[in-house]
Length: 336
Image 1 (cartoon, rainbow, N blue to C red):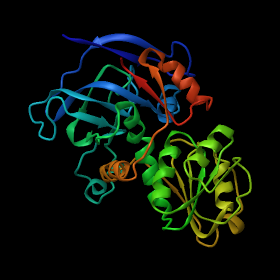
Image 2 (cartoon, rainbow, N blue to C red; image 1 turned 120 degrees about the vertical axis):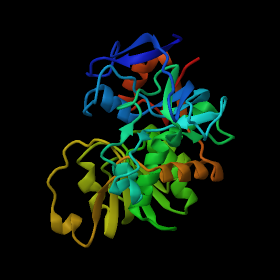
Image 3 (spheres, helix red, strand yellow; image 1 turned 60 degrees about the vertical axis):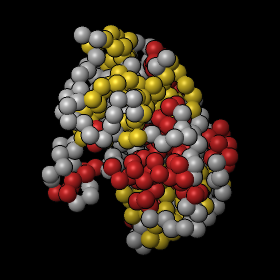
Image 4 (cartoon, helix red, strand yellow; image 1 turned 30 degrees about the horizontal axis):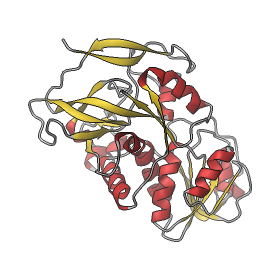
């Protein structure tokens, strides 16, 4: 059988040297509606870090993480209809849903109890090859290189859903708490939609990038907001930012939480922070509609991504750099 190379997780623990190990494995064979992809690039997401460090419950080990995959179709299963050999495709976090439950049938497939996620239930993109279901893979728009497209496929889509859930309208004031890979894509959509964006982040470099990308204001994570905000997104997985974001909201505003995990949210005062119909909403995954709409915006705006590349063999270094907030924009693994 033909082989491939992959950075494999066999035991969770702190990110660092040896956590993921380069191995040679049998190349997967696509069946049914699956496509085999030769991976060109794979974004490094904070969810990958949570997976590697054991913050998420893992369905199985060993595991290949990574869910911002760009490559071309190398083989197709016998029932594939959407793609042909050689097509360039992207594979994000949502890898499969049942299509039959109440959530799937009502537009909330992101909440499907049987959903499978790339790099969690299904082996992901920290590898030279991977397979994916054709219905949960997407053509990559022209005008984006493989490396530049990778950040769109999780940070971009999740950030877009988080933005939608804030319900901030054209001309509204949007807050962003934390400014990593997802936020640097989302701010471009928000600005395209006519929102004024206020960014709260501890990193001066991230503040500078936010201003470069059109933020009206950028300051420290816990600095006082210069204005009352219509809605906000908390990207950083830091529970204390939730009452901070609520305190910066006008009455009726919504805070959406974009992270898959969050440190404990401290007790806060109902009257001053939540009353007057303020809301807190979590963002659980995304739908295929979110993915399609974000990729359309990527072309229309057009979205430009800031990336730092690492060879596949240095995936551990990339995860540590992400953990230490040393990445400007998004880290992307390249296979060649």
